[in-house]
Image (cartoon, rainbow, N blue to C red):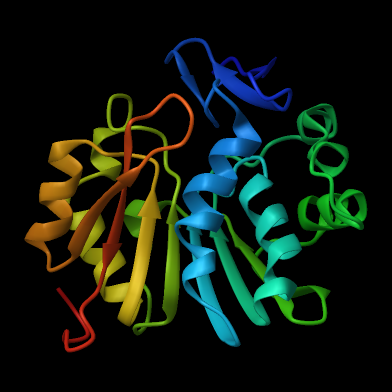
Length: 228
């Protein structure tokens, strides 16, 4: 499938899939969207602790990069697991250039390391941040136990990949979360919210990033059983 790199409204770049009329990040601003959905509505709900994150859709590495950058201010030590079946090429991630787009000291080196580090094994990017990239399809992913506190659900949209937004998938996500854990996603579709609630999540509609009216945050009740 053709992939081309395009510039978004905040000046940062993303990958576009012309055959699907789909992008890895919002054309209204790739970096703005990532901060709004995954940092402000997700990561910043936690502080002063160890935290395990599951990212569905490692993609360009942008979400991992900004999480790595923001964790110290929240006094978080992170174990970050990212799922991806179609890793971007070195030429693509270098052209995206998030290491220089994200205005944080050390971002350029971290960006190279998170793309260059090996798959299927933990890699310490810096003290307090361990990344494990897994070349695994979400539809086959099963957590061995409730292992995560926060899920970044950044799969391609339900319009082009509806099988990634089903009750079965969200049941897997519910089981993967520890009680009290949360899942955040850019999507606000009614069918997505209903699928989440059907498996036991409590959902909230939150203001969306630029170009979107709303997004969803789902939480696993503190008294929930291990599985949906």
